[in-house]
Image (cartoon, rainbow, N blue to C red):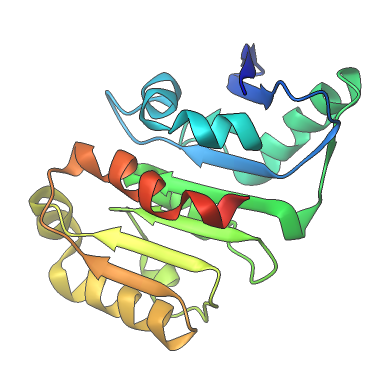
Length: 186
């Protein structure tokens, strides 16, 4: 299998499975700051994901609602359809955790948090089983505090989601996370 890449669709990179179908699940994948832009995030994404779902690579400054607003006309112009919220996922790495957590709903197919940045408001939410988080790089823990991560982890686990602390370099989290949880997107 393979995929077709569309670059700079309103500041987004979009990949579409080249399977001849027209109805797909969609995953929005947010990068972080500096090196972890949308192009870098695409390079971290297993080809198997891009072969099976529409992937939308976005910068962390773009709100989820804006991403969806830009994606709609693109899908229509290519005669493609998304499976709807129940087939939609959001994943965020580092600063990409902000828009991912901001857009969280229990009705999304999957919410993936890759060593994420977060706000205080994210710590007191109710989460559900559609959330998975891997965290633990030294830089993120020193920036957001171990207590903050453990509070977010407790909220995720309380809702039936998954969280695990790993000893990885920050930049290794996207590849490890997506390889481990890719089946949740299909």
